[in-house]
Length: 475
Image (cartoon, rainbow, N blue to C red; front, top):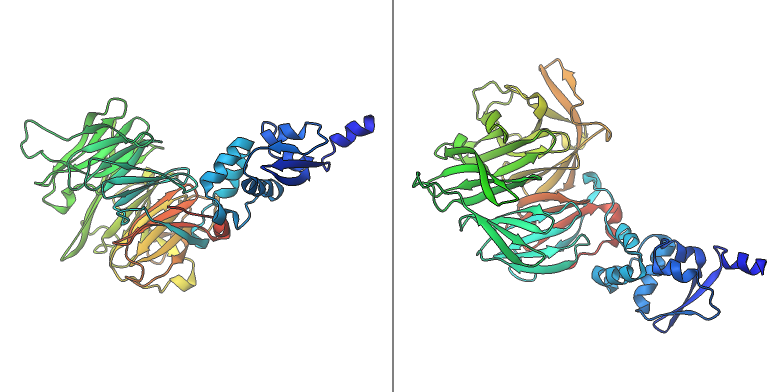
């Protein structure tokens, strides 16, 4: 009897299962690796002389059993079954956490990232904008619809809004979207879990007739507030603070007339959680090149704590090389800009800003030092302590040499009297302008990078290439 008991709990003891009429044989340790609270672990503790019958799909069970054995999905599994089908069965057996771990990408490193697929919504497939979630999920706006993809990038549903087109979208809660349109006034809130419209916020002023039909240009989110830049037909513009609990305007950070480049509406707004500041930037391009501003507000005092305008007064070491785009690394409170003529990248520590705080990147990759820049479309996005730059349709990444350090590791350059930061620059994707289309937007979510291109259907999904073999994207 003692020998029988000992044998019944031996990890290598074989257990037979009958799933949907198909027989499987595995070991006690494999079933128990599903976790103590799983159905499979519970079944493994039952003493049975005949195979244990489970009335479920045997083909999907085969995939999940392979997952328990090797801790990865078979390469053919995601071609045969959707993630939704696998997830439903994994939930039944209690192994959904194992499935999620095996399905999600490896940590994103721009240097070895590759396109794994392109998500194309079923209709109106040229996206106007999109929003990536912290879990790697994706909301794609196309026409007046929002198509929703979960963290597996499996299509969930589409929500039709009352707008003809959506040009701004922001996640204010996990299932709540704030959207705006360049063709319609107001900020509009939708519950995407139910498809329900919940309210709108408009910028109005009864004492100023110029404030009407104010359209949303940029949206940023904080735990308590939404920060929105509005623009009126007569170019009056503002940045409003909206209370998330009431959906009422709580304050006005700025109001200005956009008749000059230094007063145009902010096209980007970013909330900096570490120090509680709001950063707005605007860029315009005309016959004489690029011009614009970066402005930082403290929403508590409603005061501007720092600003810069380019072209400036000539104090900058790169006077005449105005920025073409701006990005913010919210993890390390660092501001980045990309120069419009040279294509050079510069950074500034937001906690140590001054008259000319910019430090220009020294490229440590010899093959990139002579890389030319055509001076056309350029977009900058900071994500996971990496800087992604879209130039002329190509995508490059700047990353730190010391992965454990911050951006502030500097060394002096006595010859030209300025500081430099040593970073490594690599092409993530080098294409000629127009080969796949100019990059329109870059955004990170989870361990993924999402890229849209001008007049091109779908959103490109980029992941570290060592995981690309087992990723599936469905639309």
